[in-house]
Length: 168
Image 1 (cartoon, helix red, strand yellow):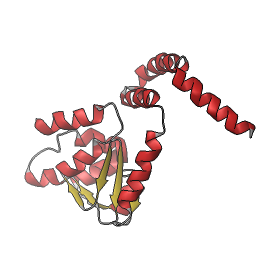
Image 2 (image 1 turned 180 degrees about the vertical axis):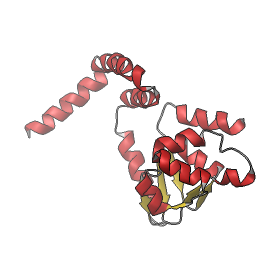
Image 3 (image 1 turned 90 degrees about the vertical axis):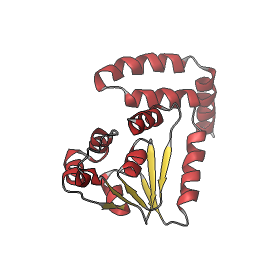
């Protein structure tokens, strides 16, 4: 119970979250990382869902989050067969977004954070919400959110800055 609520709250947080994995992320550690918007791993990272070996379910959202991130076939291999992914395999499967050497992973994450911080927070928050919606609801939400954003001073300023840069 507690992990389900915690991971759902983390995923629903209004701002993007980034997991940094620098070692084993097994079971709950992997589930915690999957609840974040982005995952960055060091070359020392490895990922697995060993719960079935213990006679329990990877139940804190791992089943659907894993399938959503890596696809159903890879999720089945990790869950049914206990397959462990090293950092490179996790990147290839889509479980992590980037892999760096342990001594540079923090700098890489800070660069990602700086890039995200340059974005419009209002648009970022609405984009994050749109990504969580079920597909049929997305078009309606996208139109409403875009209407709201198109009227904002933030959008006007950013568009002007963009157009002024293109004129140079």
